[in-house]
Amino acid sequence: MTRRPNPGEWAQLSGAFPGLIWNDVWITDEPTPQYNCIGYSMGVRQWINPQSPLAAFQQQYAAQGFAVAPANTAVIDGWGTGGGAQMTHGSRQSTSMPQTGLWESKLGQSFRITHGRNQLTGALYGTVLTHFRPRGGEVDEPEEVSVPSYTDDELGRIADQAGRVDPGLKAGFDERLAAWKATWSRQELAMSQSTYDFATGPEFEAVVGLGDGIVPLVVQEMTKPDGFFLVPLLEEFTDPVPPETPVESEQSRGQRAVRAWLASR
Image 1 (spheres, rainbow, N blue to C red):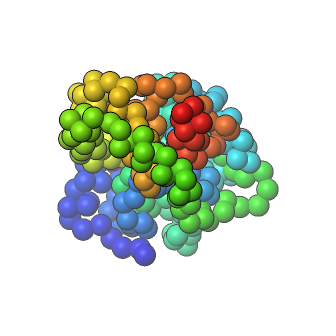
Image 2 (tube, helix red, strand yellow):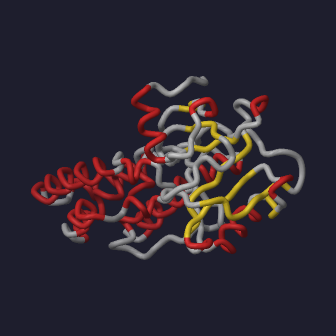
């Protein structure tokens, strides 16, 4: 599907990115939390957190087969702020509308859009700081989203542990989790590209404040399609599960975190 933004969507997009030009903007996919700009620019329809600083970001793309390239030969741009201290975004030459010469970006959980190459410049993503092209061939069109799955035995064991949580604590968890999740759609977060950006603020701290008794409930939530957003919450109570590779998706990392917890029971 490809369509123009409606007036409300255009107000949202142009408010976040004042440099956008209406004639260059087409919506090429609807909002979804299942993939972000980094995965999309690499040709993988998964959520991959951008690594910082700039050198780590370049190594991340190198691990997926992309080489740093001059701007005039590149097909992917890397964005950041603070001179590369914080890397924020990846855009790619449009494959949805290649005839236009436009670029394309998945805006966090929000829309995927076309745009002029530098039209996202601003407070949210900063500026283009690096460029890439594949070492061989072209960038693949992203595959369909692959959602992690669990065996019936795994789900049963998780449900058994979650069922042992005090009902009052569970009620508090459900209420505070809903309040935290409601913040994810705020404009300053909806287009963020790292799951760790969401793990801030009083609503998040309120969930953490319930203590480690909520861990079985957190793990149970993590088996849902968007459960990988809770990896930073689980890490408040357990040892971190670092990415196996620079380009491991958060879906994969979340699944490994769940299984590591199960293995410790």
